[in-house]
Length: 404
Image (cartoon, rainbow, N blue to C red; front, side):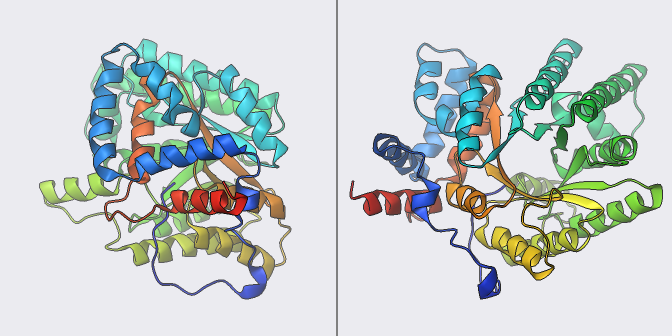
């Protein structure tokens, strides 16, 4: 998922719109004191210079276990963007969201793991998340990252068709076993699995594994979802090809649509290695691809279960408008929305209030595990131009509305 950016585009038909800017609904669960605390945090994050240096210092301080660092993180950005340090910590967040008709997608914040013991530990944590989800009707999905289940070098070699050593072959088979155990458990517990996207140079084996699991576990209900980063020039074509493959092989496609998370890294690597950038040249092209992907999923919703995983107001309103256009129930189980916990509450809670299937992506894990995730969130909410970020703008509007 991605922060909001603006570009000129046609608006949805007026009769499909509901007010995604209603701050009274967006922040009604926050007390005055909690709202003011959130305002102070986003004011800090709105300063790009403070974020730049604070992120660097904070990352190294946490990794080095410097005194009081964990305490400071827990008191500031951690509770804004994370559900807790472990599964049990998340229960309060899960319950609070459900009181406002918002579902939860649990996401253990482990990535880039190495060593069989660490990889097995991540798999076991994912299995525990499935069990917790099964005991909560408000947690229909969990998320997993392949990079938390296998050595990155193996994915890199597979993507580039390079031969694996005997040890790497065993490592890949262990990955397949871990992922199959996770998907088998999810199927048995009636819980969905989002398989997150990765960088373009390791994505192909991730796609192949996701399709392999779908063919096995998506014969009736949709258990396994692949993630499509629509800022990549080939993603719309890939989405359609994967759908056709699913039709041919007789299973249902699960598709989570995001804009993308690695734009700067992707473009820099392409420049350094001298190959064409895999990313669309501008924001408008990405928006067009994303919204065409949403339209394709809505039009084929009987055989594609999809999630509009976006912080873009237009794209969320567009999916809602298409559902109305094609006379599809607003709570159809194959058409969903989600945003990250701690961001875009104006979208999440207004969609939920209108009756749509919407969830928050709730990341959890020890401070050391989630600090890269927290840094990405602070960077997304900083402003290079000095203008007010979208999140800060809505919080400020609600503070004014309440007369605080």
